Image 1: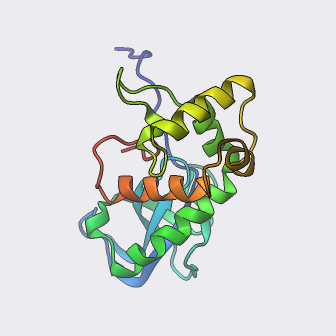
Image 2: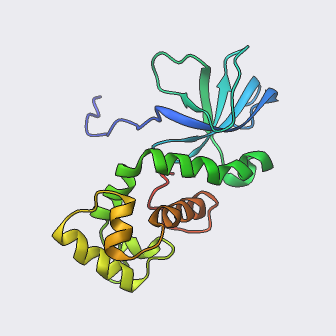
Length: 188
């Protein structure tokens, strides 16, 4: 039976290392042991448990390839992790790593601001980003009608919103820690 209407599952290509244990036990897959890496996916921003190849070294904050073809340091992606189940070390690295992801993918997050839509008749997606209330939202919508934003600096200059990158990072942190029900950036 063919089910061509089902969209292909989206897999992460890259992730950033939050923590690792050289002789660890997997928490997501029973019986898997070895170099257990806690990472966060670059695209979907989900917390992942990954099995490293024997004899490889990892650095905290390192961007690693976890895609399907040609992995060099990773044996397999074991599964998704809940924020409450990651180590204290991984939790303390989270904000730095998210800052790297947002900085390295500025265009993607600026495009989000350029294209964000209302979630309901009363709530706009932009309002869910900390620091953006009704006033900033109105200005953002007016300004992006004239010309799309080209960068965080452009957004800050035209709207007056201080350090927009910080607000996006705060929102992603809230989504990962489960403080909010609606997710704008983290794909569960």
